[in-house]
Length: 199
Figure 1: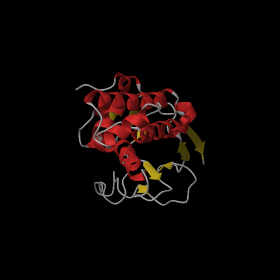
Figure 2 (figure 1 turned 60 degrees about the vertical axis):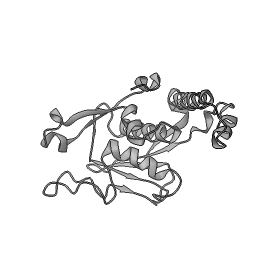
Figure 3 (figure 1 turned 180 degrees about the horizontal axis):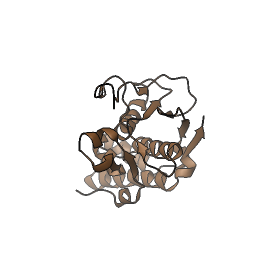
Figure 4 (figure 1 turned 90 degrees about the vertical axis):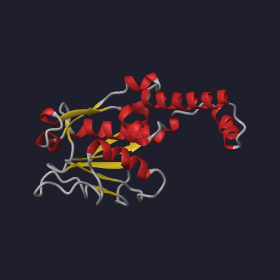
């Protein structure tokens, strides 16, 4: 499997999942998600997928300083509707990492470890997403805006040629490299593309 090498340099997200411990999947319920994991699930790497990963990373750092985030103990809210813009894509990535789902998730074991009804859309918030710990009610609003990391100017004409079916294989490869270059630069400039505010 060949993929951009910078994926390996991105900070991993460490979680503790009581359900996985009870069911014997991971010792002490401890495991990690890396950017490659979410790229494989999404099928691609882009500023939106990167943003979802960054939003989750920074929210969990704020809510669980110096400890692993507890998967299944997080409610996530979005201002947009599920089918608006890229909210659904971002929700899928965040769901993978946090376990939070709308009505489709795990119903629990005898009332414990439930994952459903932890993700909500069309919420009255002024941020990209709001993360709330279920156990103590602590919340953070996270806003993601990658506009300060501009795409390479060569991308636009290359995309035009691809959309018209006129791009050579080398040009398609070049476009992909330039696309991932922007994603890499977004990760290299995390502090300028994301804001976290405690509620």
